Image 1 (tube, rainbow over the protein chains, first blue to last red):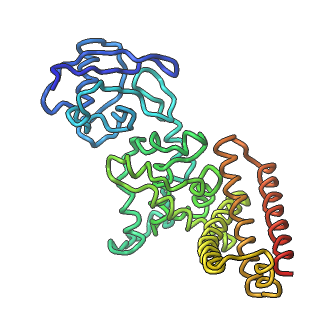
Image 2 (cartoon, rainbow over the protein chains, first blue to last red):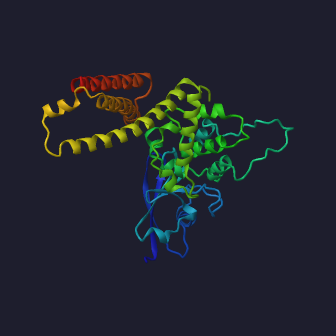
Image 3 (tube, chains in turn green, purple):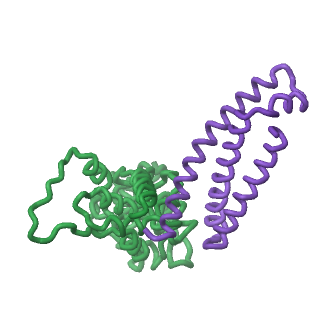
Length: 237
Length: 114
């Protein structure tokens, strides 16, 4: 194993170049450790984003050797001895170096009806939702998403159609469609049906392949497709 | 649901349903061809079997209908994703292509089964 890691890191915004740094190899070293070493010891002007360092916040996602990943959960030793190429996430505007603008990503959560709409008033009793009920199980399957945008960066459809809502926003919409307490279903299904919505998904499952939490947004999107079709055939939503 | 959303949802359903019909039709068609040509087959023999066969005419009529629904919807998606073409003009062009496929398909069936 070589003593040093050759790290090629993107510098600049939409226009830029790769800059190569030599970083000492350590045991149990993550890609985030490499980036942090560069920023603290070699070039303090390097911009990147992270918070928890332990796979809880999802803010350190970057493109590593061509794949979107959480850098805090990617061990360098598992990537081989070749140069490490680190870029910002794809499909999002590059702000500077490894930091992307997440606004378009989260705007699409809002566009997809990603906000819970209470159907009961504040004085109502607690809603009883049976944990084993099919709807609750559907919601459970997608509810652990932490919004890291790895799926969004991995989605070919987003790169072809920048208006496409993307796997994470549609997954969020599906968890709410499966929420029996929610009162905003008509508006939500209307929001996700359309040529930039769920029916545009090709089910290539790149989102599922790359999701660090092993969620399956493709299945959520398939659920939305069926729900929207049922609503369309009924004539309502 | 607005008209656009409803149209997209129904178009998706139509494409899935037509895909299922096409899958069955292609299998039946291939099996029929393999069976029919095992001892050699001339155009006159084909016409001799197809003319006046209501069952085959119905089957291939359904085949044409499924293709006329499925192909334009798929091409519409390709036009959107590859060329960025969207909107009413694309829908009209897709509908025109569907009519084109249906018309020429059924016209060909008229020659085979009429």
